[in-house]
Image (cartoon, rainbow, N blue to C red):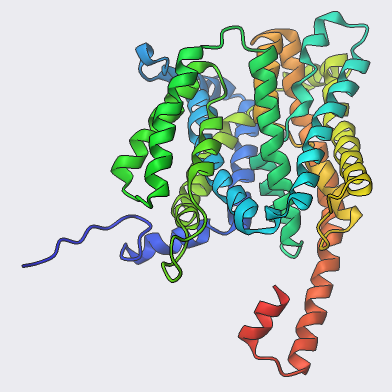
Length: 431
């Protein structure tokens, strides 16, 4: 009797070409380059003579109206596809909290506090700049969000030799930052919060949690439950990507018994990262970055508006001051500790990198000012400009730090070779 063999695109027995592609997509540097290329393509197309075609594509709607799921292509990208990225990020973050560096509460408290500081200070800066402009006051929360996808992509491209603790710090900060921003949306920018769908989220989420805790891996059982969780979250009015984080947090990290192989969180992350890196995040970036400047005159006009100035200052200066100050205060006056692998100049570079704000910032701008308004157009330009400035400054700072860590790595490698340490053992020691 022949045993039936089923294959999965990313399984061990799948086609060699697909496996090689998946392995390449699991490299953060490759994923960062793909996403940044997609963002540049969207930006160029949105400001080209063919911009109407881009807007038509982004605004094309499809889905089931009765389930509140008739969305535009752009909305499907930011609310739907990006939930896959947040699921993978949730898996990785939970592994850090349970089995990684952040399992120590004293270390976890530092990036969490940094996220709070990175929300409060940009909001205050925006409010101060717009004190005399009551029409612009509603946009105080626009510069509070850090875009986790873009920030991690930039870090992956520029920081091959930077310590892994820096990425963990940024991942924690960005996830907490986004969760705070989503709470702000629910409290201040949600006209209709549907309680019933929000409560119904708990049903498929609880079933999903029970199954994964029992180490169930069957996609035909878990995917429908994940889809229902996302659908109810979207219908409730809360940003739907929160469902991805909650589902990621539900997956167990620790193996049930020794010798069972990778934990379920690691297994899911390995399977889903290629889809996140190769499809979900680039498609999102392509549509999120498509901000039309309105020509040179429109750009100059926007730069003189207090909405633009407040957002740019909030993203660049506010994030730098808020994240750095909160990190220093917590590390100085509490028992919380900054990771020993990080220097304060690393924190400064990371704080500037936190000023990259795309997805939630653009969403808050639309909710605050209304699509099509002059303030919203200024907000879009400001988010793009502020994020670009933050990325450039962070690149300058962190590239310099990357060269320092590369020299340290090369010196340790030479010392290990001189002492005759075997290559395999040498790698373990250096890492």
